[in-house]
Image (cartoon, rainbow, N blue to C red; front, side, top):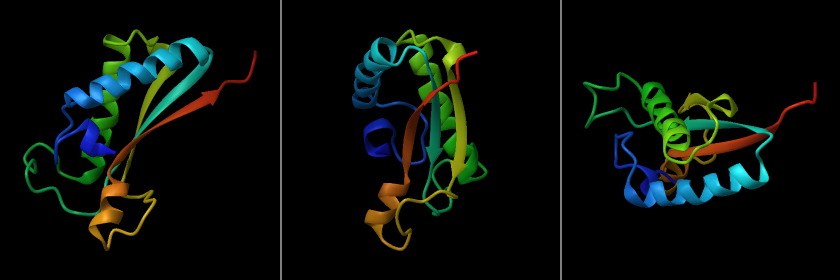
Length: 120
């Protein structure tokens, strides 16, 4: 959930999020070293308020959040850059209704998808 990784309207990683990502990177580097990692950023449908000068849309915020995780995995956790990519989903792939605070909280997330590449 974004409350672990980021503050509201921000893409700056929080300390707790960095620790979770370090632990995850250990598993990615040890057990999934031949897999591609796609970091997907997601948001709720609320308009950007706090950082509207920086982010024109939720789509931009979702990409910046995914990109921040990608850079952290590469620079701080030694995940090989050729294995990682960022994707912005914005508000367009919700997992819950945006009509409740609980649903919106579930939609504000970063998903890390591990994909086995076909052998060449």
